[in-house]
Length: 392
Ligand SMILES: Cc1cc2nc3c(=O)[nH]c(=O)nc-3n(C[C@H](O)[C@H](O)[C@H](O)COP(=O)(O)OP(=O)(O)OC[C@H]3O[C@@H](n4cnc5c(N)ncnc54)[C@H](O)[C@@H]3O)c2cc1C
Image: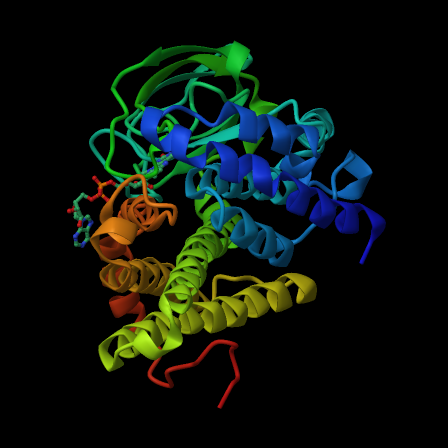
């Protein structure tokens, strides 16, 4: 392992107590975990995916998966904030122009820029590959006026990756991804954030207005689909799944410790069955995550596209399966832990908090949107190609 990456793993392990210490407070207050994110900034972890020549750790999506899982085991909100930031960074690394990369990536690596994501839009909802609000050319600037119903960490981000319709007369599928600096925008908070779980993500709605120069377009104008398919979707589905898996694994581990402490002779067949089912669910997610991660890494190493149908199906299936199975595992573990240790907010084991957090997983890009798409794609893959592609 390269020196930069080895120190990123050391740094990730070192910040775990900070994430753990503030997890309950950030959940209670529904406020952004400033202390934890500051620790990630100071440790250089915001630059995990930034290439070494731009001052980062030069990590790949396998490193994102490994570290997101560690963070997910301590604070699901902080872990998702970080994983989503890395997802945005991957888009800039792979699709930003030279000028944008040279100016922005060293600042990300130095912990100066946390990147928020603006894809959801009032009207079109979660649909990723369409846009309503359009970029408007104004001299040498592109004007943005964008309603964003849910922006994780929007109040604390120094930069935003925003999807916009290419121009006022463009079709709604001609979407352009733009980078906007906080001081290029006028930001207005448009809603409260008081959700069931993922409370620390502070994902309130915003209106963003401002202008950016054309070199801040990421990918081709109107060509966001390629950025989404090659970068935003794979980095997102791998990173989020790792966060959810880390959280469920932690709860399983804590509940196992609790059951053992009660005395092995007191473990009923019913409890054993419930533990087994939770273990099966997390094992399935872990194996499939590793498999899809390897498929994506193999494509990236070979320089081949992720747009192939089996890979698209696997990435969608990973997100759906991870969101459903990790939640199911924690739901079952709450029954094992019982009222005092499982259901109460002040339990020493964070079952209740993780249960609420993981309930969002199926909504964080709606599973219904993915399964309807996957069903249509599956009809075109009659060979039923497994991940990794080529496995018999
Ligand atoms: C913790 C968290 C953080 C988030 N952070 C961000 C962020 O930083 N930036 C951002 O842009 N977004 C963010 N999101 C939004 C997220 O990615 C989704 O876009 C959003 O949650 C979808 O909301 P929705 O379910 O209301 O909308 P939609 O996906 O639009 O769905 C609305 C309804 O229509 C149904 N539906 C839609 N399409 C279909 C279909 N094809 N088939 C069947 N039914 C369908 C759905 O089931 C649902 O009932 C975040 C979400 C969460 C939970």
